[in-house]
Amino acid sequence: MATDKSDTRAWVLLPDIKSDPDRRDPLSAMGEAVSLAMALPGLMAAGSTIVPLPKPNPGHLFGKGKLEELKQLFHDHDIELVIIDGLVSPVQQRNLEKLWKVKLLDRTSLILEIFSDRAATREGVLQVEMAALSYQRTRLVRAWTHLERQRGGLGFVGGPGETQIEADRRAIDLQLVRLRRQLSKVVKTRTLHRAARAKVPFPVVALVGYTNAGKSTLFNRLTGAGVMAKDMLFATLDPTMRSVKLGPGFEVIFSDTVGFISDLPTELVAAFRATLEEVLTADIILHVRDISHQASDAQASDVDQIIANLGVSDATPILQLWNKIDLLPEEDVAATEARADRQEDVFAISALSGDGVEPVLDAIATVLNAAAQSDQLVLDHTDGKRRAWLYAQGVVVKEQSRDTDSVLSLSWTQKQKTQFDAL
Image (cartoon, one colour):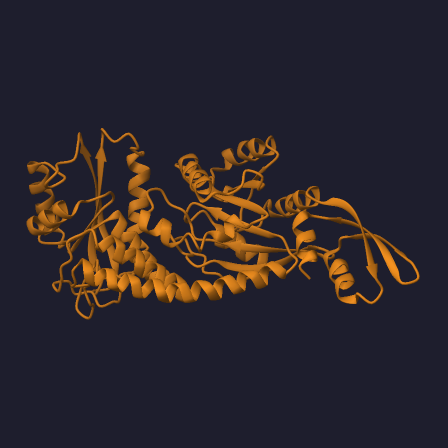
C-alpha cells in the first residue's frame, strides 16, 4: 500500500475471545481486518496483533498487563489510530483512548468510514449518513483535533478540517428526519427507474458474494463495463446494471451489488436494503465465491444467510461460481474443477482470465429457457407494437396469419407474459 507522510499510522487489534460462540478463525479474521484497514484511504497499517482473551473486560476490554504492553507498543511505533476488529462499548472506547492517547475505531465505525468514502450515488451517500448517525446516537460523541489527517469523512477518524457531530440525541434525531425526507425523494426517483426497467423485457441476473470475491471483475468481463474492480474490500457500493446479449433475440441484465461481509453493522444492513432490492427482483442469482480464500466456506455461509434474511424466494435459481481458480496451487486446480463439475449448479471460473465463464453463460440461458412455458396468442394485424415486442424477445415459435389477425405460438416465461400484459 502506497503511503506518504500524511497517512495516519494505524495498528489493528483482534480480540480472540475464546468464549464467543461465533468465534472465527483468528488468522483469517485478522487478514480480513487488515484488509478493511487498508481499504480506507489515508491509513497505513503499521502492524497487527491477535490478543487471546478468555472473556472481555467490561471497562477496558483487555486485562491490565496487556493494556500496558499495548500502550508501550503503540508508543514505540508512533501509532495514532487503533482499529479493534470487534464491538467496543462507548465506555471501553473512552477508557482505551484516554489510556493509550490514541483515536480508536471498532469494526462498525471502520466499515462506516469505508462506506462513506466509497458511496457514489446520492442514495448511497444519504444511506451512509443515516447509518452513521444511527450509530453515533448510541455513543459518546466528542471532537478530536490531534490527528494530522486531512480528509472528509464521518468524523470517526477525526482530524483538522473535519466537522465532528457535536449534538445531543435530539439534534441527531432532527438530522435523521431531514435525511429520511431527502432519501424518500431519491427512493421515489429510484422506484420510477425500477418501474421503467421492469418494462424492459429482459431477465435480471444479480451478482452477489462476499466482499472482494471478484464480482466486479466478472461483471466487467461479462458486460465490458468500467466498474471499479480492485483487490480491495468494498470496491463496489452502488449497484451497476448492464444488458448483455446471450444469443439472437436473447438479452439479460446483469446487476453488480455491494459485497457482503460477516458482522456487517446492523445500521448498514437496514440502510442498504434498498440497494440490495435488485437481488430480490432477480430472475437468477450468481453467488460469486473466492475459492482460493482460506475462509471461503465460512464466507459462503455468511452470504447464504444474508440472502435468506433479505427474503429471496426459494424458487429463485442460484448458481455458485467458484472464482479465482487461477490463484489456487497448480496441483489443486484439477481437483477443484472436478468437484465443481460433479454439481449441476457449481462452476469453477477465473473472472480475471475468463476461464470457465462461457459455460456459466450457457447455464444462465438454460435456466431461463427451462422457465419458459408454451402458449398461444391471437394478435390483430394492426397491433404492430406488441408483435414487434414479442419478436424482439425471441419468444415467437410460429405465426399463422389469418384475414384480420394472427395466431402466434409462443415460448415465454411468466415474467415476460406479465410484461407483455402491461404493454
